[in-house]
Image 1 (cartoon, rainbow, N blue to C red):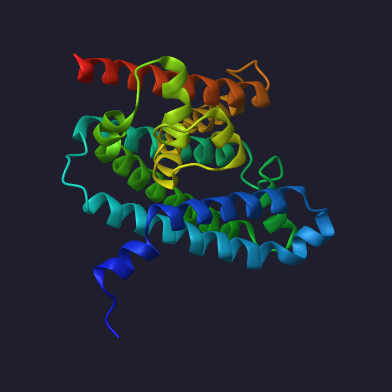
Image 2 (image 1 turned 120 degrees about the vertical axis):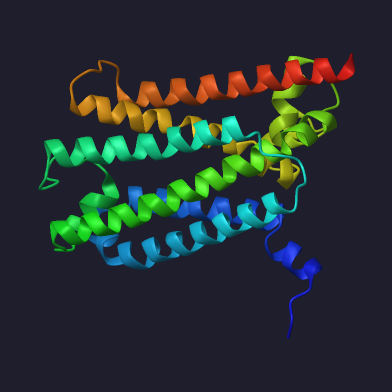
Length: 247
């Protein structure tokens, strides 16, 4: 039976992606906090499921992006792709350069794979494949955001900074309460993750520099600062764009 465009839009729509992103986040957290012996037993099923869901998201971002006529602002798309792949590549290169046996690798997934007695070449191949899939998905996500940005700004109810911060994540005319209880517009909630996720690759650049001992701050502090900065910058740019639109 042929799938209609309406069915395709439903399967790969923002609401479906919204729930899938929650599932991926929960799976990643479960894998990170499970005790070692139990985590080793579920690592493969969980990783396979995460890979499949990530591939689904990549396809959804591609199809959703292709359905938008608005251009993707090529310079920003190109810079984002370089930043994303560059950060992941630099982190992986620095890790392998300083710890070819991966004995100093702190990544919990890598540690679990090592515990399953896989050889280092096998783990490296898995790592490169997983990173390539993840980075490609994030680039497609970034492209979708760039193409959607004019519509996001146009639908904001106000240029007031407080309203903008809430609405870019919760949707037009939503309140702070709606944001915290999950009563959000899936489209806005999904799209506004993209700039934060893209900015988070600065953390990968930081991890790479950490291997060369060019850093001094704690990782947790750096990651928190990156997220806060990304949200603040995104909100400020959206506010400015809304003000220009209202003139």
